[in-house]
Length: 160
Image 1 (cartoon, rainbow, N blue to C red):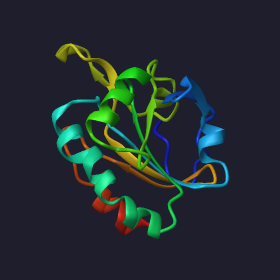
Image 2: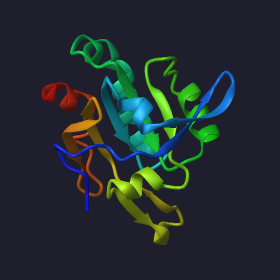
Image 3: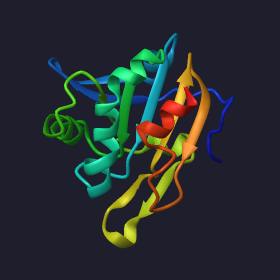
């Protein structure tokens, strides 16, 4: 069952590469006491994700912050090294936290698995964006397979 508006974000550890190496960050630490926009992509370095999804949030950083967003985070079922390399490639600087859900625990816990086995990509995350206020989902914006509309930075801004 997919997470929906009004639900609490489940407690799961994600991975994040920092200057000190790969570190765990719990969803409790990430979301508690903050307004967070988390968007998920099927894969780092993939066409729509690299050309539109991630760049949109980098480009709309100031507008999102002006609407009270404390943290903008990108999540994918990739490892932390890949997410870090993709962030460097996309010049995210400190605007977007690049989070790895390599084993898909968070993705499964919120019901956003995307089976890409036949395409040789394994289990991935569906494309979505969520607005979370102090650990509670206020907006869950899930895309239909192949679509890129409601999880865009531009659309998220209309929901803040």
